[in-house]
Amino acid sequence: MKKIVACSSFSLLLASCGGGDSPTTPTPTPVATSITLSATSVRLISLGQTFPISATVKDQNGASMSGATVTWATSAASVATVSSTGLVTSVADGTATITATSGSLSATASVTVAQAAANLVLSDSILTFSSLAGTTQLTATVTDANGETVGGATVTWATTDAAVATVSSTGLVTSVADGTATITATSGSLSATASVTVAQAAANLVLSDSILTFSSLAGTTQLTATVTDANGETVGGATVTWATTDAAVATVSSTGLVTSVADGTATITATSGSLSATASVTVVTCTADSDGDRLTDCVETNTGTYVDASDTGTDPNNSDTDGDGISDGDEVLGTEDGLDLPALGVSPLVPSILIEYDWFDDSGHTHQPTATQLNLVTASFAAQGIEVIHDYGQGPAPLNGGNLIADDDGNVDGFGAEWTGYKATNFDDNRNGYFHYAFHPHSYNNGTSSGLAEINGDDLINATLTFYNNDLMVAGTIQHELGHNLNLRHGGNINTNRKPNYNSVMSYNYQFYGVDDDCTPTGDGVVDYSHGVTPGLDENDLDESNGICGPAQDVGWDWNEDGDETDTSLVADINRSWLTTGNAGDGSFGLLSDYDDWGNLSYSGLLSSDGAPLAGPNREVVVCQPPPGLLPD
Image (cartoon, rainbow, N blue to C red; front, side, top):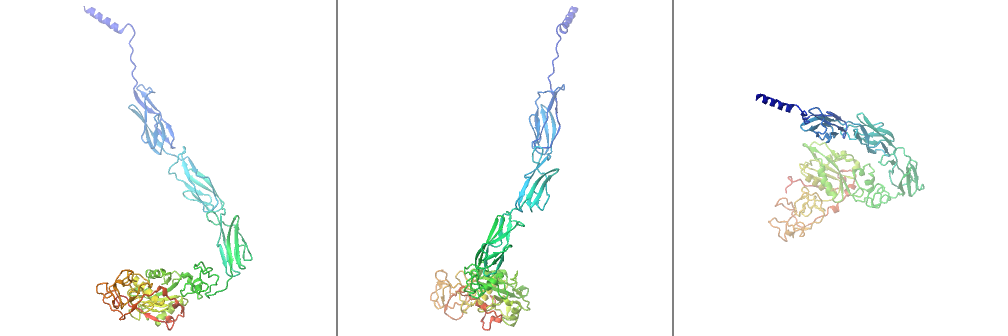
């Protein structure tokens, strides 16, 4: 039995191992085991430049797996992108890493983008200028091999002839003179050029004067013709010819000198190439001077508008058209003694007041008036159409006549011998008859008076004592003393000192405080003369409800200081100071009237120009009040 089993077993073994076809071993499935790239380091020198990278995937047997899926990625798309097929494209300078991935496998390639300049191109290669100082902005563009701009490329500029054309560091080309030049832009080893041609062309012809007027025969005026290009630059060497339409009236030389020949009109023409310009000539001989002011009648055109010395706008029958005591001829031509009134700003059609100020310094301060103080005076007169010209040594010439006078005590002897000597030494003789002479000491005659002045004269003293730095008080004092020179008194046309309805710095009530502007008898800081518009006040019949300005203003005043403003038919002495209560009046009772200061200014005080003390033996002099603090209210 054991044999049979063993035999059966053997038989089975044979059945399984032998006889028939042999069994086949199965082929193993390919497994991706590696991935390699066609390039692992790429350098691109142009933006937009491409580079293909391929990826090879192999299995465990080293066989390429052509169907393997590969995905691509970049670490910096702002530097380089990669397509789904591995095409790398440069975007900007920098570095990026390109990664190819297949399953769990990946491989990388480093990409460096370093843009390199390959071309330099100018915005224009041919520049032509027809005028000097013309400009053209050239732009230099540096690009790589793909035509992409290389950012931040340094470009330098040069010209072959800066005498013809210059170029700035930014490429701005400027024409300088006729000729040719080459502009070169350079960036590294690259360069580009532009040719420049400058050929200045005449565009305009202008004459130095277009209207010529002659008042005498054989008078001459030199005309100048200027030929310019479109930029207004002079065209050198341009030929100009000259012609006149009537040589019997006016001739013109080959150099443009026009000469008057006879009364009439003519036209002078200057020609250069196709350009021309003309000047009209009028010859009107005139020798008559009806008003004796040194201006011939034909230049005194009586238009009221001053143009120049040949058209003064003044009245030929009035030697002082503006009525300021200075003749029209002096104001237009300057004086025969050499005083240059036009340079001082004087007009023959605007009343002018000229004042020279000399002053003392004492105790560490100066009595020189300041611009601020004088501006208050100037503005007051200007509002009435009168110009005041102050010379306090401020300069420049001719406003340099005011003088600091050295003095030991700051006091002057009024209009005495000391003052006379100072004026003779410091006040130019040719200013007599034209300037008022204002002296600014600390005091005069060792007193406390604020001023001394001639009535209708030209000399005044402003003793600014301890109020030299109070602008309102100094300005009020200057205008007060000047008012005396202009024939004003403390009551306008009378010597009454404190009329409350006389609203002027000539009044003692308003000299230091400015005039009233709210219908009360106290000052409100305005430097002014009276306009003569305030109603009269009868001290024997006052109505307190009417105040100073009358019933129309509805502002009353307590004239008897009894605490109300209702009294009528009141008798009160109101010609007094109103700064405090209880002050005494002048002891008289009458009708107090306003006065039109501005309408009654007199300039005739200047006409006595003999230079003598007080400008004459019969001149009236007025002494003025001390300042507040030195004068009882």
